[in-house]
Image (cartoon, rainbow, N blue to C red; front, side, top):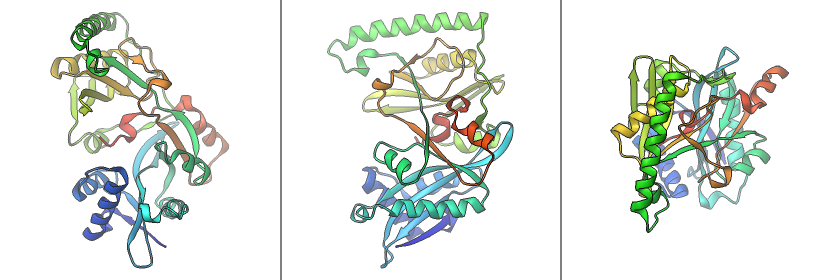
Length: 325
């Protein structure tokens, strides 16, 4: 097996077709070559890093990608890499080391590119592999916060109409109370030692096609509407007031979505670090999919740096960091 590490713009069109076909077959998706190319070029560096495994006849066996992202760690700007787009074609899966070989090639290459840390949110099939074969460390399970607007639609109840009337009324009253409360008290998020570098360049790349980005005065919020098996879901990706997460910004974001969209459900997935009464925290046993955050350090760092990374309370991490919707 031959492993090649290439930047996005170094991959030829035939190879992109093989990558797309392999991904679609592995995950039962319908992605196009251009979707992948645009997504992987739409980064802070203008490209991503791809490890490609080829058999002796030149057939693509698997692929995995590292997407560069700038983070602020204890006030210091650092380049991290987010793992994604990983697959090994079915006919090659008897060799359990293909994926780890690709990852090792990425480690060596990305270390030279000054990437300090790899992050990943593996699915249930690759989580154990990430811990046992890649020796990555589990930090936390990303939390879900939800506001059901049409509860009857969510549970597909026979009494949908009555449940929806009740939940619409309840959510309206709840938001009215929160709007009033936000005038009296504004809860600010505690500072996080590890967070994405949010600036105009990041926002331009991260929230481009398909996202609704609202900037009004001191307030900013970004969301996306997705139909999830008949449920119109508003995914709130980020919100802030003067570059800080606040309960007032969250309230304004939810009010905007309710006024301008017709969601059945509003979701925020990630860390908040502030008091709020707009969304209900979803119990872990009720979440639709566990989202474990794992990491590994590529270079030698001080013990204090490792301590910062390994403490789940230090992280501000959510959909804005990793989701590809």
